[in-house]
Length: 188
Image (cartoon, rainbow, N blue to C red; front, side, top):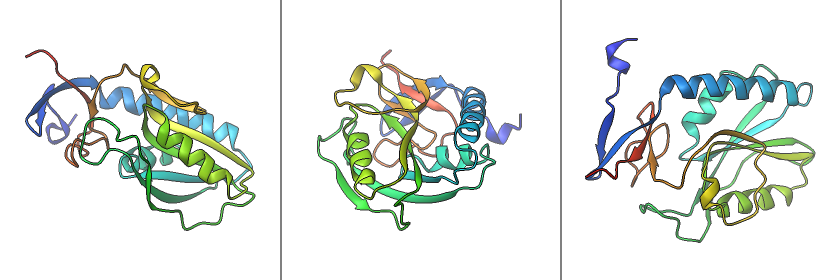
């Protein structure tokens, strides 16, 4: 592995210390598996992948490299965090998709599902436009933190209810560029 891609076992972001949680190799292996399953499940259906900005852009780009079926991509932007480490409890739609999804197979691509509030909102919002189907693909799921009923069809990793950073996930807009996923280091 080239040293320019090496990232440390611990990083500091916004004055907080984070330690490695999921390596780039583990992510790559899991995304290849998920891509194969998506290819199988949507063969002949020409789905549209809708990435939820900003967090899911890296996950979407990488999973698309494993998708070999004809498909489209669009983006939606929501906010429920602001610059905080916990959800505000309010979902705000900042950008809606441009594509028409009526009669289409929609695959929502999310970086992380924790309380389930944003995902519940997105699925409901998509179904209002009469798609053929709506599937949810998330890189991370904080099952312990989930408070709202959500449909999760493809889950990369189930993780504990802890604050994570990297691979598109941010802390006050910083840390998205880390190629691995880090967890808040409680060891002071």
